[in-house]
Length: 369
Image: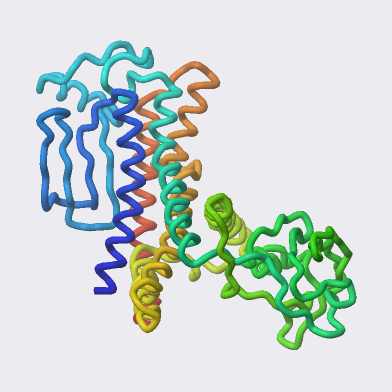
């Protein structure tokens, strides 16, 4: 049952991503040949009489697609015309029903819609989560006697608003700051901390102190379990902040990976992601069904934001790579060579599939180690 819930969550994230492409394609009057959930052979399939779009459920639940007319090759356009498809008009003039016939800004919207819909889904999940469980404010719960924070005048009940150049909106912003800024946040290096005390803005230069386990600390205690409930506007505001937090963390994590601050062993593939969701379900069972779904939603927000960011990376075969080609076209007012673009995207797709297989293998090794 846990695995089934995990697969459903994973499938919803992918389906919503592809639905973004689908919705904008239909809005821009591009014919969608097939909208599918999963990869591999079809298990279920239905062709709409009205639009001619095939809706499919495929064998492997990890993936999905929104295949549009004229998206990848001229052959499919010729084949479509033989089957009675409509005329495409001139390439890029906005007429016709193929992807390539649309203006560059329309194609940009269609390609960008997938990641944008992932961010939208993360926000909707956050809206429900915060509406039910509240938000975690950056409130200081305790200050250690004689600590750097105590010497600076920080007291229990104060709200941290900024550390260094980073704005602080959530308790987790305080928790992750030392990890993301390990060089600056160390002994002997002062960091500027801003906070509010009974409505009064305060700031001070504080030098973190090294603890017995080698961590550098300010001497304050916070907790993600300390949550507040607000009105409608507060819930909306913190839902945006929650979504933004996970988008920012994804970018920061990629930066740490490139700088060698995070091991490649910490990167999870689809198998470990499903296991993470499954473990979350199991660990939350004792708290009741509501808490199971709230904790699953928390993981889903992270994954949806992560999926949106990863798809925006300017790499071949990803939405970001396709957007890069469209930006070049918009700037130069010339379409890149179609065969070259297809070759780059195909090569990128093969590399991504290879990496996906390696991640699956690595996931299995990690789980059964």
